Length: 195
Image (tube, rainbow, N blue to C red; front, side, top):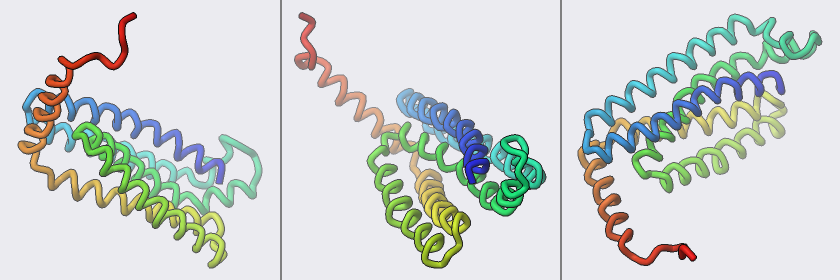
């Protein structure tokens, strides 16, 4: 399990880079009043991260019987990793999309929405389902991971649905309103005194 989680976290770091890039690019395009560029950036960054994740998931599936030997020489670990490789592959693909769309949401100023989706998907669905499958139905690591994958899948579906139904022209106007509001508050007394 530790071997699989280590690989998952390595691959997740790629998506985190795309997350930051998407957040910055989308917010810059919205602030510059370029809704088509923002929309295009979302599609490109999501597809780029998705294709990288799919390639890495396929590599994990192909190497599932030998990948554990990078971490240990035990045959018991090799068997466990090869059994969990399909779960790892699914997690890699989902974690290639979900962080990118979270970055898009942050770039649009939807932080509160993403926080509610995270809490709902992981703490209301993923963890309870994982505990139920892992401990009540005695599926062990497969059950726990199935619950978390389900939470991530629901979150990914919600973020895809919301992102690709977005009216980018309205998002530009919202971002301009936020910038104007910030500019109006800038003339007020600073929060920290210079003395």
